Image (tube, rainbow, N blue to C red; front, side):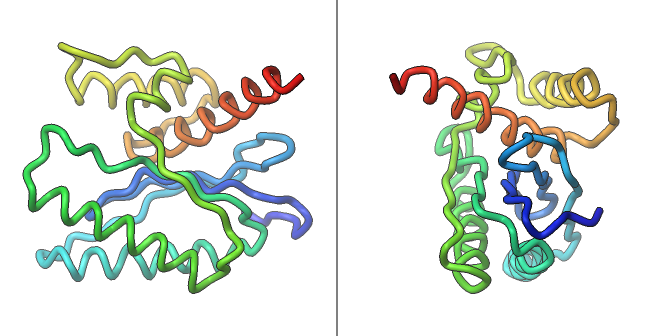
Length: 174
């Protein structure tokens, strides 16, 4: 999708070493501009992360009006140490891609439970990951009338949570 140069964009990411969902939203209108998924099926995790980094750099370069990147934080619970390390390396690959493309781009990471609660998806004890992924997909289908996989749904949900948090912050700033 072609984005006018004057539109400032938010890039939201659901990072993973195998399948990372992404969504672009206009920072002013909050319109969903584009979305997709970066995948890698390479056996070597470092090769997958390198491919993710390369694809992230392509997205950042293709959309020079990206002003902000928000991505899901690595959860430190329920993951083995090896997986935590790989996801942390993937986060660094994102930060490096941002810095190499445009060090002026701001970025932040948000906890999965935080962004989901902002868009109205209940998390917590007893709620399994598969249930959450299904609810993420349902949220996007209901709000945007599009069918996407769980990675893209997560990225769109992350983007929406950013705007909800901004609106709440603006209401409190009197």
